[in-house]
Image (cartoon, rainbow over all chains, first blue to last red; front, top):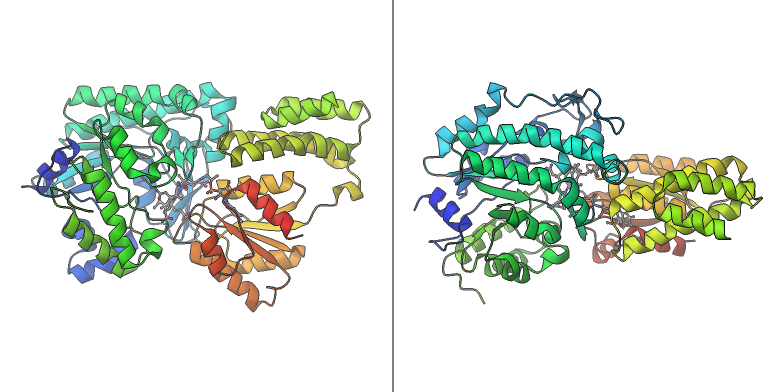
Amino acid sequence: MKPRERFIAAIKRQETDRVPRFNRYVGAVKQKMAPIFGVDPNEFEIKQGNDGVLIQIGINGEYSHRLVGEGETYTSEWGVKYQGIHGFNQPVEHPLKTAELGGYKFPDPNKPERMDAIRAAMKQYHQDYAVMVDLSCTLFEAGFHLRGMENFVMDAYENEQFVMDVIDGLSNYYEKIGNRAIQEGIDVIRIGDDVGVQTGLIMPPDKWRQLVKPYLKRMIASFKQTNPDIIVKYHSCGDFSTIIPDVIEMGVELIGSMQPCGALADPFKIKEEFGDKVAFLGGLDVQQLLPNGSPQDVREGVKKVLKAYASGGGYVWMPAHYVNVDVPLENIWAMLEAVKEYGNFPINID
Amino acid sequence: MELLSRLADSVEQGQSDNAKDFTQQCLDQGMEPNNVLLEGLMAGLNVIGGRFKRNECYIPEVLLAAKAMHQGLEILRPLLSDADAQSLGKVVLGTVEGDVHDIGKNILGMMLEGSGFEVIDVGVNTGADKFIETLQQEKAPILALSALLSTTMPALKKTIEALATAGMRDTVKVMVGGAPVTQEYADKIGADGYAVDAATAVDVAKSFL
Ligand code: B12
C-alpha cells in the first residue's frame, strides 16, 4: 500500500496495515539525525518513515523558514518586521499600529511564484506520498503578526469591526492561495490558528464564533467548491476542545495537534466524543514527556496515544508539535520504535 | 464608597474610559489618592486576577483590566505621596534566553503591579547577565523568570546558577513559571518559588517578603 493511500484512509477513519506517520522535526534536529540515517536533511522526514510531506505557504511559511542572523532584522511583504532570536524569527514591529486598516494592502495572492514549492513537492512526492499544504497562522493568529498579539486580542473586545476587517482581508488572501494550491492537486489543506492555551481558548468561544468562524466557514466552503474531495485539516495548539464541534460542522476531517492539556489531556474521552466524526493527528506530550521522560516513559506515552486515538482508525501519528532540540536521541528512537511496534492494525495494546 | 466600588468594577470589566472618569471623580470628592489606588484600582484588578486563576475569564479580559487600571493610575501617580508610593518591593521580571513568549510574563507583571509591587520588566530573550545587572542596579530582592518552551527551561537553571556565581543567591528570591514548568522542576533547580498562574504567583512573591 502506498503511503498516500494509507494517509488518506486514516483520515477517512479506516484501518489499514499500520498507522500513517507525520513526524516533524526542527531544522537542528534534522541536521543531527540525517547523518545517522545517511540521508539529506531535507529528505530526512520522509526517509525516517513519514507517509506525507508538508509545504507551508503564507505568513508562517515565509517567516518561519527564512534564515535571519542573530539580532538581525528584516521586513516581510506583510510589512511585519522580524528579528532573528536563537534561530526563531520574532515579530518586533507590526504594520497596524492602531485599530484601523487605513490603507493597509494585503500581499497579492496571485503571484506566480507562490506555487513553486508546491509544484516541486507534487512532482517529487505525490506519486507515492500525501501532500499537505499548510496555510497556518491563517486568520486570528495572523492578526497577531499584523497588529501584535496583545493588541489584537484586546481589539476583539474594543474594536470588533476592525478585527473582522482584518480577518476578512486575511481570509480573502488565504482563500485565493489555498484554492490555487488545491488546483495543483494536493491531498490536504491545513488551516492553522493557535487559539488555545494550556487551560482552554484564548478568548470566549462565542467571540471566536462571532469574529472568526464565519470567515473560516466561507474559506472552507470555497475550498470544497474547488475540489469536493479536498481534505481540510484544522490545527490549533493548546486546548481548543470547546470549538471542536464547530470545526467539524464546517467540514474539517482532520484535527491536531491534540496537545494533551486542559480537556485534551484525556485522549480516550476526546476520541469517544468526536472519533466518529473526525480524525486526529498529534497527541504526544512535547512539553514534559518527550524531552524529559525516560525512553520507557516515552514508550508508554506512545502506547497511550495510539491506544486512544488509533484504535479503529482515524489517526495519523505525530507528537503534539515539532521534535525539538531538547529531545534526547534515545527518546527519539524510543518513540520511533514504539510507533513501529504498536502502530499496527488491529491496535492491540493493554 | 459607592464610587470606589464603581471604580473597581470598571477596572474589573476593562472599561478604560470609566476607570479614568471614576478615578477623577473620586479625587474631586476629596478622597485620599492612596485609598483610590488600593480600594478602587487594585481591588478591581484583584477580582479579575482571582477569576482568571479559577478559569472564569479569558486572557484579553485580564489585559483590558490592566489597561483600565493604568488609565486611572496615570491620574493618581503625580498625587501619591512618597510614603503612599512605597511599594511592597521590587521584582525583576523577564522571559529567559531563547524564548520570546511574553503574554504570561506580562500578565504576571500586571498582577504584581496591581498588588503593590514595583515591577522592572526586562523583556523577552533575556540572558542571565542582563538579569543580574538589573537586579544589582535596582537592588531588587525578587527575580521572576518565565519560560514557555521545554527547550528554554534549562535557561531557568542557568540563570539561578549564574546568580550563585555572582554571589547573589542568598539575597535574591527566585520564582519560576510558564506553561511547561512544574513545581517538581522548580524544586529540582533550586528555585525559591513556583506558581501555575499569575494570581498564585503574587501570593508566592508576598511570601518572600
Ligand atoms: C502564543 C504562542 C506563541 C507566540 C508567542 C507570542 C507572544 N507574544 O507571547 C509565538 C507565535 C511567537 C510562538 C512561537 C513559538 N512557539 Co509558541 N505558543 C504559544 C501558545 C499558543 C500560547 C502561549 C500563551 O501566550 N499562553 C497564555 C499565557 C497567559 O499563559 P502562560 O504563558 O503559560 O503564563 C501563565 C502561567 O504559566 C504563569 N506564568 C508564566 N510565566 C511565569 C513566571 C513566573 C515566575 C510564575 C510564577 C508564573 C508564570 O502565569 C501566566 C498567567 O496565569 C502556546 C500553547 C500553550 N499550550 O501554551 C505555544 C507553545 C508554548 N509554543 C510552542 C512552540 C514549539 C513555539 C515555537 C518553537 C514554534 C516555532 N517553531 O515557530 C516558537 C518559539 C519561539 C521562541 N523562540 O520563543 C510549544 C512549546 C512546546 C515545548 N516543547 O515546550 C507550545 C506549548 C505549543 C505546542 N503545541 O506545543 N508561540
